[in-house]
Image (cartoon, rainbow, N blue to C red; front, side, top):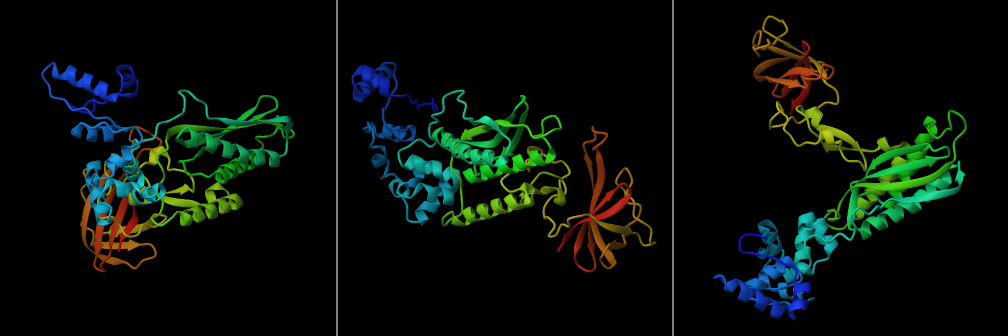
Length: 416
C-alpha cells in the first residue's frame, strides 16, 4: 500500500498463473468493481512507471518503460527544485533527462538527483542489493609458511583491497569502516579499524594497511613475547557498517581534480603518516573554536563530535570572522581599573570600561551583550566545565567574544 487508493503488487508470477497481464488486470478490475469501487490498473517495470500507467489504464510491455516515460515532463518526478533547474537547462522531459550520463548527473545533482535519473531511465530509484542475507564480504590471505617481512604482507594487502572493492561493487554496497586483522604464529591477533566512507581507492586501502603494519612493528606489537618478530600467518580485510551504494557527488565538470587531490594526499600520508594530512570539518560544540575540528584525510569526524544538536548554550549567529588557534589572554576592567567579575546570578560587578587583549592595544569598551552561561557535563566531576561568554564592542570598531572561566578572562574570537 503506497497510499490510500494506490496499491502496488508484483505481477510476474500472478500474470503467468492467470494467463497474462491483461487477464490479471481484468480479474483485479472485476473483483474490486464487485464491491462498489472504480479501479484502474497499470503495469510497468517500476513502481513509479506503473503508477503513471494506471492513470491511463495501460500495460507497458517489459523493457519499454523508459520509452513510455520519455514524453512525461520532469515535474512528475515530485522534485520541484530539480524540475525547475532541468527545464531551465533545456531538459523538460524525462527522456531528455534520462539521456544524460549517470556519472555527470551524480556529480551535478547528488544522490537524490541520481535516484531521479534512475527513475527517468525506467529503473527503480535504488538498485536492488544482490548480497545474500548474512553474506560475509571479508577477504583474506593465508601465508604458508608464515612470513616475518612486511613487504610480502603489503603486496598481499593491495590484492586484497582489489578483491574487497569488487565484492562491495557486486553487492551494491559501500562500507563506512574497514577492519584490518593480522594473525600471528602462536594465536596472537591484531586488529585496527579504518574509516572508509565509501571513498578510499584500492591503493589507499593498501597504503593504510602498510602504515598499520609499520606502526605495529615500531610499537613492538609484532614481537613474540618481547622477543623477535612473530611470523604472520593471515591477513584479512573486513568491511563494516555496510549501506547501499548511492553514488558519490563530485565536482561539476569531471572528477579529475578530486582524484588528483586524493592521490596527492595519499602520497603525503605515505611519507609523513596518516595524521599528517588533515581537513577542517564542521563539528558539534557551543563555542566557535569547538565547531572547527581537524580530521585526518580519508576519515570521517568522530560520532561524538557531529554538528547535529541539541547544543544548549551554543553561540548564535552572526558568527565571528576570526577564531585564534588558542584562546588569548584578556583583561576586562571597569572604570576604576578593577577586573570585571560575574556573580552566580549572572550580574556584572561593574560596567566594563576597558579591554586589554594580549598582543593588542588597550581599547575602550563602547557596549556589550550578555553574559551567557554555559554548563557542560555537570554530571562528570572530571570533565565538568562552567563558563560565561560576553560580546564586547570597542571604540576602535571591532567586537570581541570573551570567555570568563575560573575567574580569568579570555578572548575566544574576533568580529572583524
